[in-house]
Length: 178
Image (cartoon, rainbow, N blue to C red; front, top):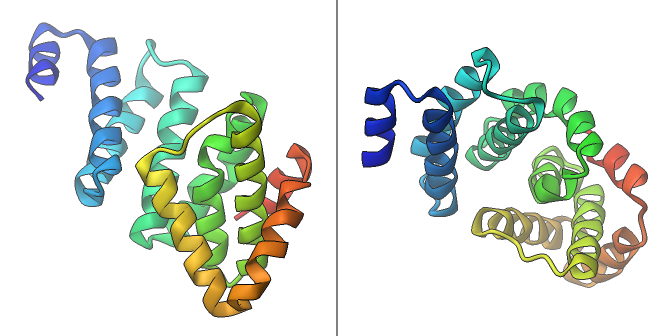
């Protein structure tokens, strides 16, 4: 917070943007959704207007905002943001970083089996690349699996996860469409 204030005072716009995104991400990881959403909305709007922000950084903050909105239960706003964003995430090769949030959106939209398949795809991809989930991603995954156990039954979740692990990236991204 101190660095952010100093960057603002100095007029260092690119550093302000970077700090806002980092601070919002930290609040999100800690589960402080309202604060994270407010900071991310601010950062995302500033990025869209800034000559210092590129498409990747705008996609990153937009995807974070999507995940935050899903976790907060603001599904209509999340879908409106997430639909056009998915293609960019795929183009940049970073869709897996938000796959759990897309899966959570599906689960909250009565598409439990598709949500579990998407989690299975994300599990397989992370295992292959040696990637770990951030706390917010793990919360989304846990939410999906808990909801799926209630809807599909505990015994059905494992086979559907395995089915998702066999999906290709294009198939997974089509499935993720909110």
